[in-house]
Image (cartoon, rainbow, N blue to C red; front, side, top):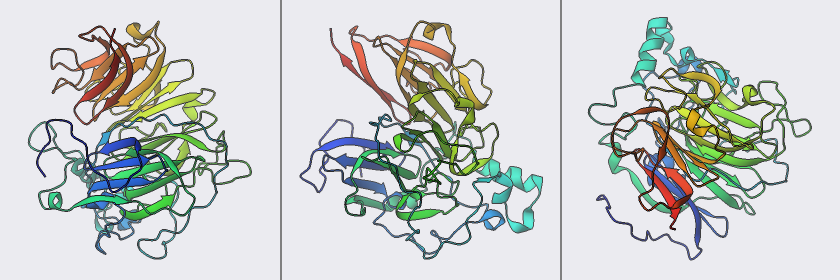
Amino acid sequence: MDAQELPEPYPLPTESPIVQAAGGWAHCAAVTGGGEVFTWGWSECVPSIQPTPDESEQVQGDDASACAPSTSLQSSPRNNAGASHTKPSSHAPPLRNSGALPGKQSGRQTHRNLTCKTTDSKGAEEILKKRKIVSFEHGESPESPTAAEENVFAPPCLVNLDPGIRISIVAAGGRHTLALSDVGHVWGWGYGGEGQLGLGTRMRIVSSPQLIPCFNSPENGISSSGAPIPGSSIKAIACGGRHSAIVTDAGALLTFGWGLYGQVGQGSNEDELSPCLVSAMGGLQVTGIAAGLWHTLCITDIGDVYAFGGNQFGQLGVGGNSAEMSPRLIDAPLLEDESCVAVACGARHSVVLTGSGKIFAWGWNKYGQLGLGDNNNRDLPVQVTMNDGGRAANIACGWWHTLATVHIK
């Protein structure tokens, strides 16, 4: 398919209006007014396309191959969803794409568990990590499909969910998708090799939607880590390159997936295979979230912004380029008197919208995605000046670009 340089209507096989949509690295998803989900793009991300047997194998601990796929990207959708009040089910249905699920792994695993049996050494572990962090300044992006994979794309299709399930929000990551229902349940499908689907496993390909057990105990809301989870349903979702973040109706932040750069905010670089409470945000009410390739941002009810994860290009906005393994408040001078109401993440840049309609951006700027008139990176928030002097109403980030809706004066 040729690149499209001008906006054109994209036909979907439905008469219902589209109310929300999200774009990942190589796939898209859209929600209709009737709560249905359509998705298209790279076939690995589309539930109706069945993977080959070797793609859908269960990857467990030391049995995982060091050659497992690792492409990813997050292109931020609108991450804030309406609150719900129905308590979700405590059990996910069995995975349907590869028969019975092997023994469930623990919720937290280190990257050493991804090495081959015959190379369980520190050197082999580092080699595996480096395989996932290839150069992105030269040649093609490490998150892009290979030439052979680029030919395996699927047309728009309806995602099959059980009767009565109505989806209100979708989020698309590198190669995985999350969907939030109108009663606060979260469903996931696609690639899950680093735990980004929150199913407690490293299943590479999950080709049908699976209910994510965000509250393992419906009686007292205990997470897999043993920490109590405030709330009883989910109100917001976000997908990063290979990690995910969700917010409960009580404002608690949960994360899961790849943790090499601290993007799951648990104080370490371990992966989280199941939703895990970010205890460092305890006592704060999270109202909005966004996830980039290697970093995560969240907003609290008082308008503060916290960031954690990779910071190679200053995408955390805290100054410098050191990774943050736990949430850190962005206390930049330009945001001191501002109250942030929305946040968006590109691959390696970040943008916030304030209550006064201002936009601030920081991080990687090779393609001018910060909107500052140059291509210099920034490690602190800088205000974006609107040419028409309008007031911004919403923001969204793609891989290497940023969009904003603006009320013209």
